[in-house]
Image (cartoon, rainbow, N blue to C red):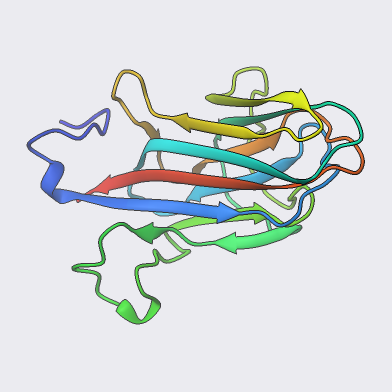
Length: 196
């Protein structure tokens, strides 16, 4: 029984490794609480999240010291992914062998997993049960400076993945208002797997 979806010696051969990686455009003046990335498990197969990477690089300095913080929250009833203010992103297989349709390379169909990344501001248009903003699964911060950066690698300390069932997903929010003049790019990478 695989209730927690953990990889073990008995199921490791059937695990299908996936990665969703996205780089934003030149983001600036994003409001506190604004969604900047989202991942939705559309299909019926559970998606086990084994790692989350967040990176922020400032390209134009802020006018005053700016602290950055991004929260990653699990959301439910995720029936429509964002469609405004960014770009659709596809998951990729970590290994292409055995994929039936190679015309799209190693990409996972959007009918199974979909994601959306910010361009220059917050993304909108999604339908999901509002996340509990004071209980995020992951919280990444950057020190207050005119050139702040964020460098966060999350893996479950207990080895048990964060599992996304159908119409469940992850949303990355900007936690504090980005002050005027500052510009930067956010990189988000979600690694995981599905069991065969």
